[in-house]
Length: 477
Image 1 (cartoon, one colour):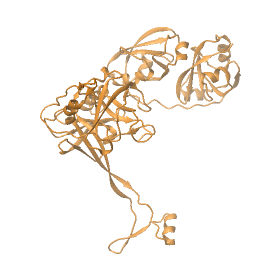
Image 2 (cartoon, one colour; image 1 turned 135 degrees about the vertical axis):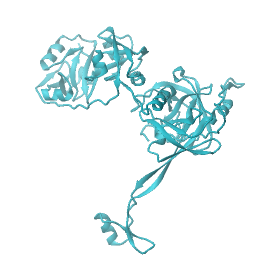
Image 3 (cartoon, rainbow, N blue to C red; image 1 turned 180 degrees about the horizontal axis):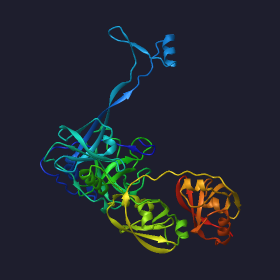
């Protein structure tokens, strides 16, 4: 469970019938509001209950029986002894116990393929799927994708009712949606609401642009479907935000378009391969937009391009703002990773960027996702004070620059105030460029600072905690 979100478990069971589920749209009632009764009746049969068991090891708590030797054995690391029926004393040993978890899923094909959350079945020794008629079947794992929290499992059955798959790309904020589940173990519960937001980015979920709803989702719903009014699955319920453990009107679902892309790869390859561009990006704020000459905040600002990656080979550089990727508009920086992730690595795509006020296009052929190397900082070198900037800086020696993977830069040792503080500069930041002018050493910094315009937002590139980012620097009169 996360600090800011609580994973939920379980949806409803499904009744085995011949053919696909006959999903019908919810019709308005006399008050103009949708009547979900027909939709629930015609979709619930494709939803299943998933229960898992796994053996976990636990160490028995020490037991003191009031005797000094028992306490001495415990505190000096000697085995505690217990009696057994044969009158022999046996040392304590780690014992195993069965851990149980509940979740949900939904059938996506008549031959028994089922979608659920990865966290519902992760580490399970046995997975039991319970149908709506209470029949229980053992499921096998076809494949999982922890990055999107999607898992594909299968039961040995035919002619099953299966859910109709919709398009999450067609969703709009304000649409009605429906979830069916077993919150807190209560059997067969339907809840409805509206879509509150789309493409919601959550911490540690780079590749999922979540659907946010106000549907009453609680522990007991993980892995179950989110339906639109046409009875089509548009998402997989995955997380909630809660301070109490119950619904607070903030629930998040994995878009079905993302999930079905995962399903396709798991079926054919048994694993998921993601595109990797090789850039470190940040959000374009209003101040940064002005400093880069944009009318409004948009796109993904490239803070750093990693050596040897698709981005570097294509010619994308630090300071570029990616406006479109493969014909898809990048409104926010969080829009880029999911789009890159689902792009086939064999496909050559066109990337539109803004570079120092001019639009440029690059053809990029992605590589497979790989982890970027960690880099550390070193702050040895010549000190320099620049009151116009409002910071103390030091030069970096050759070894420190190599460690950082930088050709040049100066490190901030103290932030005194003024423009540096207002821009968000911090101690330990390495200043690489200001207004796209390289800061190779303190002499270069002096020269650049002397000729910079005043009272205008200028992009300043820094490296902070192994991450490259831009800060909006505005010099005072």
